[in-house]
Length: 312
Image (cartoon, rainbow, N blue to C red):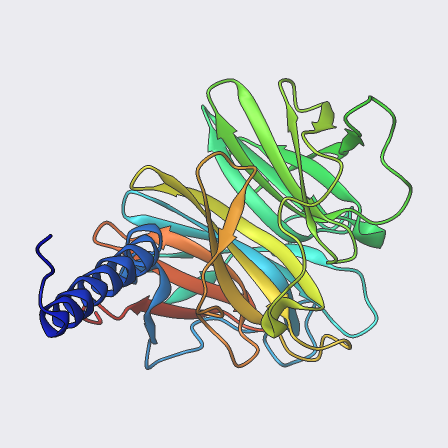
């Protein structure tokens, strides 16, 4: 029987193994570049940051906090934010802009002071604006408006478990809502110790899809102690969530992170999280007509542009 030269076999084996390693390496790197496009995870800060802050004086909005929200409609930019003074209730403020950088406060702020409003998520559906926000004791509630300024309280969100029983008592905050066809999807956190997902057809009764978090803490250090989802978008056929996280037990510092999903239920975290650090959190994306800007809203408002693009 013919036996190939042993040296030839050794060299051939090394070649095949090397080819396998190269192919395998390419397969491993491809999902990261496909699932997390550069424009969603690599940013440079705007040199004029911050673009919006608390007044720093003796006003109702001396300080701002947590997630504010920005919508762009045509040439107009609208921002809602939470203002407060130390040890006072949190009220709702409003500002407008023509470029998303230079903002003018509404002269009759606060626009809603009868209820505690913070950490809001705003969607427009038809002619109605829906604001999902935290109220007192971190209980999520809904407000509606037709003009962005005058808001009507619709009450606390009613969430039940998969079997129909009410969720356990306690905080359920940072409400983030996505609508698809006739179904509304609600992401919420409980003490920032995980992110749960519920759905509703009527905005009155919400039912958990799972009774466990769809985005859990860890296992990496950057989100070991806290997670809360701020926004969901659909981009290039996938769902992207931007969330804030803390690597510290006392939550003394926060970061902005990204995850991806094919079905809103199963999420994969970007393996190079966080995308923005240095205690800049409560991030949201806003399409400016050319690209997605990333705004961090806490403890002031900063804007970041994709590193793949030029700054304005």
